Each structure stands twice: as C-alpha cells, then as structure tokens.
Image (cartoon, rainbow, N blue to C red):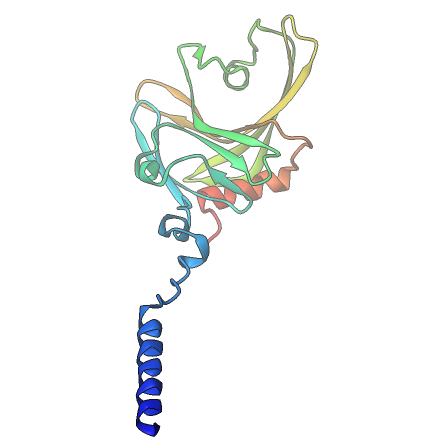
Length: 205
C-alpha cells in the first residue's frame, strides 16, 4: 500500500514538473514601447556652410541660442546661398542670404536699393528706413542694422522688418550679406540683434 502511494505521488510530481516546463517565460518589454528609431535623438544642425556673392565666398555660420536652422543635417556642409532660421518659439524668422546690388539693379529688396541708392521701389506707398552701425566688424567690414517700415501698394497694412549684416564687394557685383528678420510679434532690441549676430558669426569666442 505504501509502495502504491509512493508511486502515485511520484507520478503527480512528474506531471507537475512537465507542466512547469511548458509554461513560457513572459516576454521582455520592447524598450518600454519605443522602437530603436525613436531612441536616437534627432540631429541638431550646429553649423552650416554657405556661399555668397559672384565670387562664391565661403562662410560658416553657427546656431545661436534660442533659434535653429531649417536645414537637414545632410545638407549643412553645403547649404547653398540661402537658409531660413527660426526662433525656437517661432516668434520671428530670418532669411540668411546675400542681397545683390549691381548696375543700379537690386534683388527686389527695397532696403538694399535704399542702402546703396537712397531710393525705394515704386511697389510701396510708404517706406521709411534707418541704418545703424552696431560698433562691431566682421572680417574688417562694419556690421549694420537696417530697420525699415513700409506699406505696399493696394495693401492697408503696414509692415516692419530689419536686416543685420555687412556690405561685400565681388568681382562683378556688390551687396549685403546677413539676416533679414521679420514676422516678430514684438520689435527685437538692438542688443538682442547684435548678440544674435555675434553668436551666428562667432565674433565672441
């Protein structure tokens, strides 16, 4: 009787071990629900290489605090001759490029024509412009801040914008290179714009 009981008990234990062996271990969590592609931080473009002028002058610009270049990382080494930059909070945007002026013809930008010729396009019923020397230089060229207010023909709204940059002279043309800043809710101060230029052009190490 004892032997029979022992055999039955042994059989029960064998079946119990088999059952445990068939149970699958719980799967490891898949990185808390995120795939590998979301693990990688998005590339931040810290600097860009541009060209400007008919001599295709090379220049490197650096990302300032509180703003970013709208350029893919793969294009940053050769960003071309125009780049858009935006404030982190989208309170302003900037167009970075060289604005040509040669033989009395400007690049459809009234502030360039006004800067060189003291005149504005007939496309505006009202135009007012003021240029300020910021007291800093880029490669021996004085950096200017140009603020302008205008009203276009057939448009009742008045617009304000500004440009910060320097004058350049190429083999065949001349112009201004820098940032045309617009779409800001509140007017940016001279010191803010000066600091922005310093960071982008690395005037202060």
